[in-house]
Image (cartoon, rainbow, N blue to C red; front, side, top):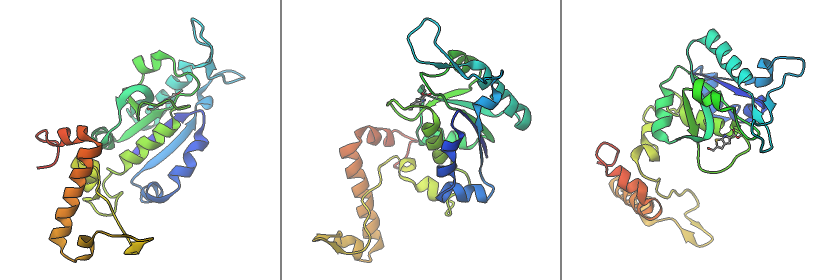
Length: 234
Ligand code: JA5
C-alpha cells in the first residue's frame, strides 16, 4: 500500500514511521509512506497556504489551491488514490474503517492546520473525512499517523503471524483481558494462579471471562455491539 501525506509539517512523520512495526512494514516493501510539504504546491513568491476566513472571526484558514494541486499531482503520478481529510467532522476511525482503508491501493491523507481547511476541500476533493476522536488537536498530522498505524496492522504480512490482526481485541469485539509477566510476585502483588497452572484450557477460559467482565464493566456499548449477529463473539 502507498500512503502520501499532504502537510505543512512533513517533519512530524519521520519519527513514528522510523520505528518498530511501521519501519519493518516499510522495509519489507509492504507500505510506502511519503510526506509532502503543501508549500511546494503553493504558488507565488511567498507560497502562501493560508488566509483569514471570509466573514471574519480571526485565525487563518488553509487555502484550497495548494491542497487541490497536491492531490491532483499525486493522482497524476500514482493513479486515482482515495483522498482522506483528517477532521473532527469526519467518520470516527474504528477497526472496521481501518480494515476497509487497508484494502485501498493508495491513500492521500490531507492534514489541516490553523482553524481548519476551506470547506471546498471536503466538498469537492476529499473522498472521505475521518476523525480519530472528539477532542481538539492543533492539526491533522497526529490523526494521520494514528490512521497509518491502525491501517498498516491490517496489511497482509505486517504483523508476523497472519492471524494476529484478526485476533486483536477490537476485532473480537471486546477489550483485552489483563496480562502478566515475571516476576510472579511484585511488591506483594501476585499473578493469578491459573496463569501458572499450565492448564491451557483453563487459561483460555479465564482470559475470555476476564475480557468479558472488563468489557461489561468499562465498555457496555462494546458488549451490545459484540452480541449483534455478525459482529464478533459467537
Ligand atoms: C484537528 C486544524 O479527530 C481528532 C481531530 C482533531 C483535528 C483533526 S482530526 N484535524 C484538525 C485540524 O486542525 O485540521
